[in-house]
Amino acid sequence: MAMEHIVRHTCRFNVKNPQHKKINEVLANLNTDVCKSKSQFMIDAIDFYINNFGKESFVTVKKSPVEYVTREELNKLEEKIIREAVIAAKDEMLRISLGAKEDKVAQAYVPEPSQELSRLDEEIMDDEIISNLAMSYL
Image 1 (cartoon, rainbow, N blue to C red):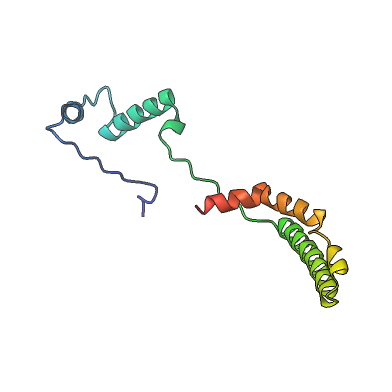
Image 2: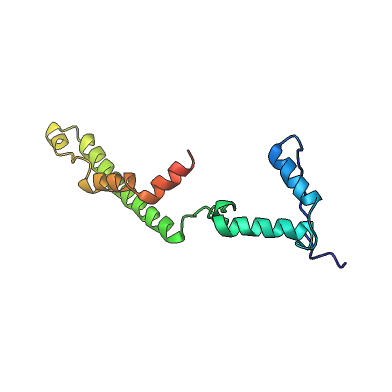
């Protein structure tokens, strides 16, 4: 197979379109003393165009792959969830044990949700990584 290194692209011209008609006339009457071949003429023209306008203008840039959550980020999130669950469980156990006595004085001492829990809530709400991932699914 001597042609394995050859790549083919087709090009159609609409002779009712003035721009296409002009290009077709040039290609049909190409002076082979000046240009080696029609293919080389088009390659030179396209190469000139790319060099003068920049490849970035014409080539689709592939998007970077989707960023995944790292194991470290998952471990940190797991630790936060466990801390929150422990704090919530302690608060609930205290509330239940004080409520079981049905003593209004004891119920007055039921602690408000801990400041640590509310701080963690704010921290989770402001977590940039989670926010970005959530927004990417919208």
